[in-house]
Image (cartoon, rainbow, N blue to C red; front, side, top):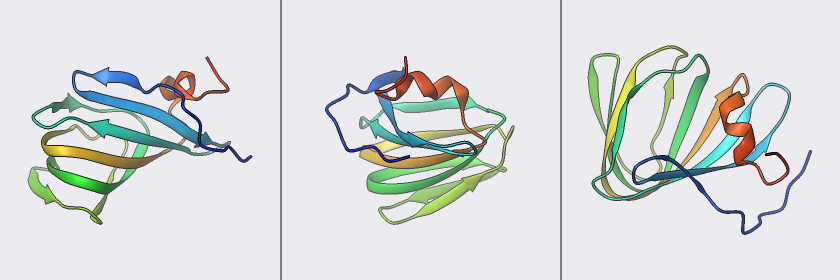
Length: 113
């Protein structure tokens, strides 16, 4: 499966946090998140494992009883069902991979909905 970039709107996930699904397959899903400075990634969990990569900006992530200052080029893994949260310290762009496919993000793809 291959998809070209398009001007699909981002969907608000939480106040100040928007996302769009870039591509997905049978076992994983790739999302781009735009996060506004001073927004909060509220404490939450989901059954899918999540890998993240900070493209730009700066954040503070909280999980596993630890605080992580995150800078461009940093990456992380959040196991499924682990509660996590974050503070967006600068406007930030994150790319995230969810496995298995995070079903709630399928409508955020231009060919779904």
